Image (cartoon, rainbow, N blue to C red; front, side, top):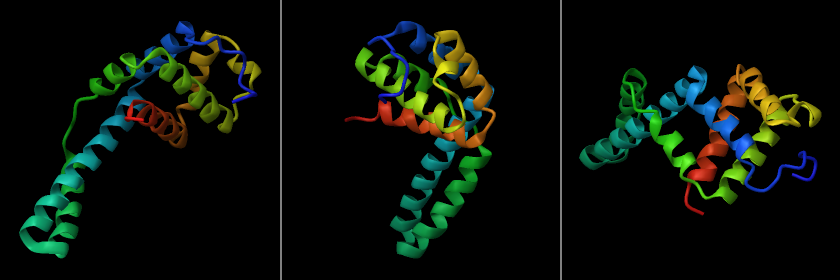
Length: 146
């Protein structure tokens, strides 16, 4: 993270841009919903199938759970609330991880130099599914227990 612009510790402007992006981006909401549905329903189906029919039941239950998760909707707001409630140091680390994702997608250090430019880069590069996934992975990493 040495090549990331000098982000002041606990920089509220960058964190605010990130939160605005996460709460307003329909593409990010769709990514979050899909990942959450797949993991919860798949895990639940695998558990129920394994409990009832052993290893083969777990396999079948996982597949059925994944299909069910794909076909149902889930609540998105939980991720935003979790990130909002992070300690300032962890939010700042999250912004740094997202800088790394954006730079990997082609953003330059200069193009991320202001909070507004950071917000614009988020919207621009998130059109790419791998960038959206990278941003969500960073968010999941930041919100998981250390």
